Length: 301
Image (cartoon, rainbow, N blue to C red):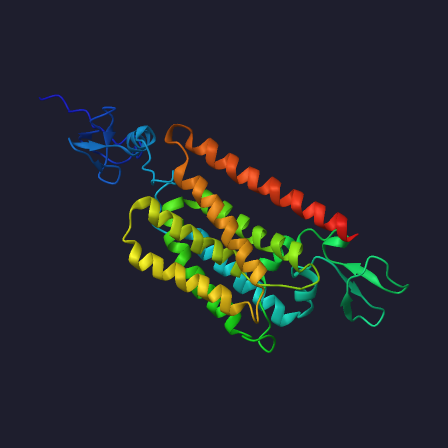
């Protein structure tokens, strides 16, 4: 009588009989656990271990390569949700729009800022410590029946964000892209504060102008055909001039300058110290914008 052969089972599924071993760890694996390898098959744990030892591919700017522009999707979603909130509660614009200084009268109306104001009036804006307005205003847009564009304000901005954001995010990676977007938005708000502190402004245009500047700098750094890029940049600057008659050109210009400075640091940082230089440039710009903001608010009050 012949001896009974030993039954081998998968190390992850003990009830499943199998006869194939992982070529890295030599453990038995069932068909569900087999992962194709150059030679034989690997188990799931060995595949994960191998992936950790593989160096992640990076773009020319140091960002991780991503196939899905999740940050751009998230930014568009935030803007749309904020717009829905405005439709439900229109007072959100007055409460969270970018405003350097203003007064709320006893009748609930909004008046021009003055450092000395009569009883019954109350300060609003950054002069009243509402620092969040520097960023929240960049996620709000004109109500459907107000301004020159109405609902087209958010439609045009989101279309621009969709087209530019995906390109910029794919090259910068998510973290650098978020820093660029927020610093561009902040740069637009700060220039509004410096030059037109009494204007209530809303819109993602400052951040989008920053993305436009980033696209131009990135294209030069990567050696793209500059004919099409130069036409794009000329159109962007032309729109900045034309829109100055009915929009906040200060916000557009501030976002453009901030975006250009950030992306120049991203594009030309030395490779051996790339992350440090890029982060340092972002922090330096943030400190500058904060100093300018505090100085202007102090002067107003």
